[in-house]
Image 1: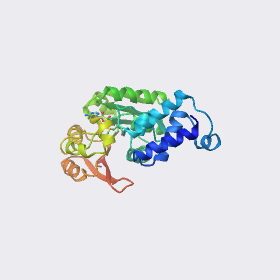
Image 2 (image 1 turned 45 degrees about the vertical axis):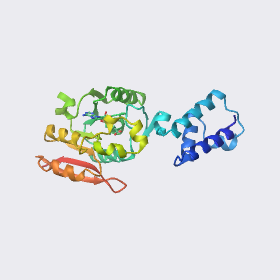
Image 3 (image 1 turned 180 degrees about the horizontal axis):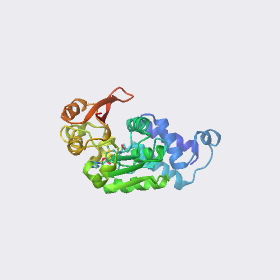
Image 4 (image 1 turned 120 degrees about the horizontal axis):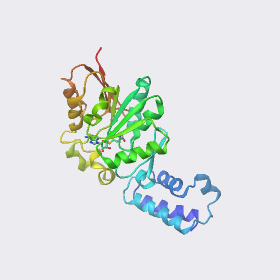
Length: 277
Ligand SMILES: C[S@@+](CC[C@H](N)C(=O)[O-])C[C@H]1O[C@@H](n2cnc3c(N)ncnc32)[C@H](O)[C@@H]1O
């Protein structure tokens, strides 16, 4: 099969399946699976593709058609300019989380010791560690598989100022908590009752431990705030539907002022706690 034919068949399959941005998806698979780009298509459309390679490409198209997120199919996702391997053990890092990292880097470039609780693929930890090279970042997760992948991602990207700890919520930081100045987290925050209404691609493929925030979506935050000592700077990603619930939760937190920030789509997405002076 030549390139033109491959394009033709895959374009048809993706459009028939109602895949949004089918051209973008097709080109991403082209780059990711065949290591070819748009110019190859224009200049070399008649080029024969080895049957093993075209079968691999068509298999990837099938997976997308079945609803698997393209990042899992490709096996990686770019986050803050860092290429992260993603498997179904970890959430695919989202654009909103890049906004969270941007806020933290902007406000905390002079801080030294960070924690990323629930690191998943290592997205936040790697971005902070790379962009604040004099920092030390503790990255934790309750999932051992996620932690192993995060560690691999740091290593592959030549990032060595992260320590990985398997642990539960803020208590998982154990004795290291004292030295941490800045805590960042994008915890699971979907209400259990809302999980069924998530996009099928998310519900079927992404890990529940990364999504399920309990009955009111606040389980992680409740536990976190219970054990949060005074004097830390805290940057949390939140659900737009939880700002009110969180406002109530932090109302009896002593020693902190609280700010809610919106994301680029105009939804409340971040909660920042700063020690009161
Ligand atoms: C929403 S995902 C975020 C992953 C990554 N930080 C990101 O932003 O792409 C939440 C992560 O928290 C982890 N997690 C869930 N409950 C946890 C807990 N109690 N303690 C530590 N990590 C937890 C999950 O395994 C998952 O990796």
